[in-house]
Length: 468
Ligand code: BES
Ligand code: ZN
Ligand code: ZN
Figure 1: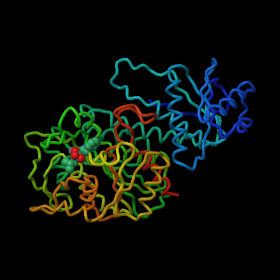
Figure 2 (figure 1 turned 45 degrees about the vertical axis):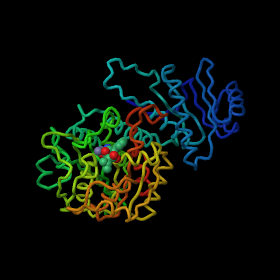
Figure 3 (figure 1 turned 180 degrees about the vertical axis):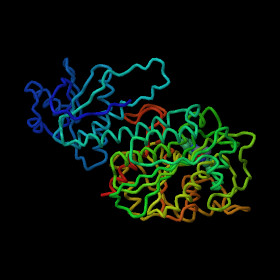
Figure 4 (figure 1 turned 90 degrees about the horizontal axis):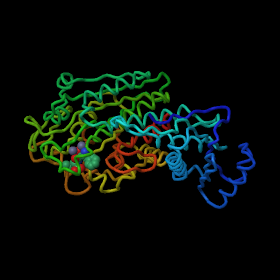
């Protein structure tokens, strides 16, 4: 369990973190005189960050203009540094600043940094630091905690191996988590998916020993600002071996339990929206299965009739994400959405093109909507970079025997994958390929080891802003 920060009215802890713009700020914070001098000195000499231990724990950070994404990020990262230095030494920490936003950013960073996936350790080596609070009553503490909770839930889902998290289990986890909200969840099991003729999802599932699931979440508050819903779609491949087009191992297969990172992102963001009571009508769709070779597995050369009746020639069974996403996107059209937004660990090309610092975003929706996604990414530092979405890229998806093939050419695979998906929705569409940032192989500040919850904070922020 990560730390969930609190607002407390009385000062209690000897362990202080101060976020200050200048030494002048300190007067309003009622800091003991002896500390004031130490702090002023730290601020002038250390520049941005100083940590002092004199029996008690004191950390001082000089905050910049919080309008800039990178200045906000500096506070989250500072929080992670403080958490790591203090987590096994002290029990509580009090964070103060005249800026409520600075405190929120610190609490978010510390809460996210405190996350650890320790379910499978017999010796859990618990941190001693379990309580972080502030006396700043302007901090929207519930909002901060909902975002921490949603992100860490998404991380848990990604970190769970397929030995536990099969497609039916993913659906169960979603049902369980949303019991604490006013959103509704419906799970389509295999028979229903068959009767709907979701050919893409069923094809990928053919090599599996577990049935597929298709989970639908609806958050429809009475005060929703949108008449037509926003549809969110997340790739829920609980494990991707590549299928008959098997991935090489050890390398690309060993972290493919993370191939439901898009599903984790969208269920996490939907959960946050429901807890934050974001006034938007949202419908979230999660097509889920694992992708395995097996006696009955779908094969390169197969022609699949998709949910929307289009036919797809399969030329690589490892391009399975687009097969299951396509069906969910077409199903989403039935709700006549004002916007469809998806997240998927869709392509290695996305990782090769911009690395792990950001997701790739593209689409045919209004540029203003795409700009909002990019802006939400900058604000949360759960970043996304826009790529072109020209029709030129469609050419590569022409098949000799079917409407489309599931494989593009050698270049810009993240864009041809996006263009493939575009065929399956008639609604304004934005696609986010989170393959790069979804999984951390090493520790990276507050982003966690393994599952990062990539996209949860971005989509949550995007929805929050859209509801304004
Ligand atoms: N799940 C992978 C994409 C991926 C790669 C995610 C690396 C995270 C990290 C996806 O299903 C896949 O295998 N894509 C293929 C598509 C190709 C066969 C057209 C790829 O990118 O190589
Ligand atoms: Zn694949
Ligand atoms: Zn995949």
